[in-house]
Image 1: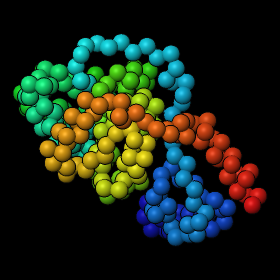
Image 2 (image 1 turned 30 degrees about the vertical axis):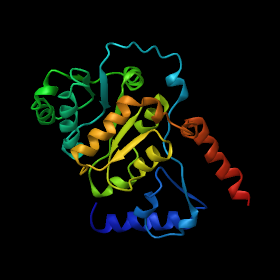
Image 3 (image 1 turned 180 degrees about the vertical axis):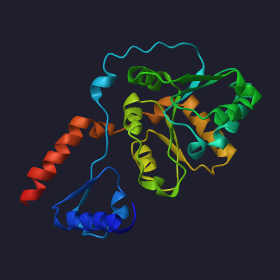
Image 4 (image 1 turned 90 degrees about the vertical axis):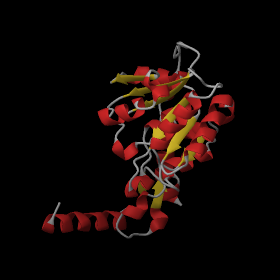
Length: 248
């Protein structure tokens, strides 16, 4: 968008944020990207999950391996290179030899798959599923030992809270997240005790320590107070703002 059209969009945004009673956004820091306005009007209402998706889900445990699962886009902008080395190191140990399996669903960069397979310990222990249904994704979330949350390694990623995070919370399995320091997605992972958030620059040793904690103590990372992210609860929050705050 260039020239006069860009100026028109900017003027429309200024008018909206000035005249609105409240401004809602899906992340805690999103208002920092908007035109300057009265920040006291900003409210965060995130995306969420549907509780019905997790009812009566039959999860078949295929083997005794520690499954590390990721669903979605996986490319150079969300590639935790240290993670693959950490998983290789653990697979080389007597404790986890032949026990770790990487499962990737969605759109995966071929070069990234090749990079993972360059680790001899991982070459035979990676499964690339391609596209699978949402129902199957939920099943994998629930039977994995660790679910990966990879936030883009970019400047604007601080405000990016992937929608699947809320399904990961509901799956009640440890989440290993990678993102920029202080990112909004990491704040949710930390505040719900659902896992650990690391930087893409984290050392291989620190990543290994995180994985060991999750493999050995999965119950420690059971999500707490995550029900507030259920979509019915989020709808109630919209109603509260409209019918309660507006009348104050």
